[in-house]
Length: 241
Image 1 (spheres, rainbow, N blue to C red):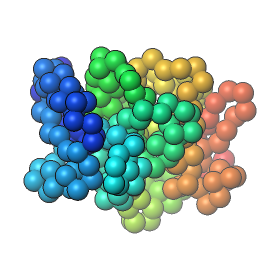
Image 2 (image 1 turned 60 degrees about the horizontal axis):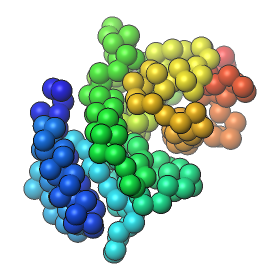
Image 3 (image 1 turned 90 degrees about the horizontal axis):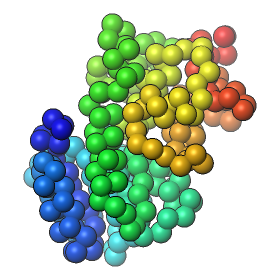
């Protein structure tokens, strides 16, 4: 694929064997792979060059993956795929809460990781069906907010509000489909991701994160409303709609 020939991936994991395996496998699929055995080595690699995606282990000696993810999110919207030897739902939800774009439990099939990398990069590069449907609508205003679809930037009265690539992708869907109830399955399809478990809560986690950034009271949302038993509805006029 075209994006794989350009994408630079940083693998941060303290398991030397897994690092080498991912380096060989992802390299054979066209990606440019750099390795780091922990947070300090990651910082050094990032000081040397920019990366399109970070594959980050959750459980590492020293600084753990959650702490590293929080640091990354405080300064960039760089996509993160988190890996963990523990596959409990709570770990996955926490990983998404701190800003990871995806989460994969170890052991995993390298082909599944490859599919997830491609899905995350497609979202980041704006190749989703949502962007194609919004070609003429490049800036969208709702309430005190303005979403720039080209710059992938959100601002409130001129003040920038940081968004992860996952948060931007789902907000883009909402603003280009206003006043329409969208089910979780429809949102999954629009994100052009991979097949997911029917009990997957990643959509709910992203919505929760977005509400914290755009709602006055996230517990009583005015823009991204829950329609019980059906899905979510984006009301651009907020409390006035």
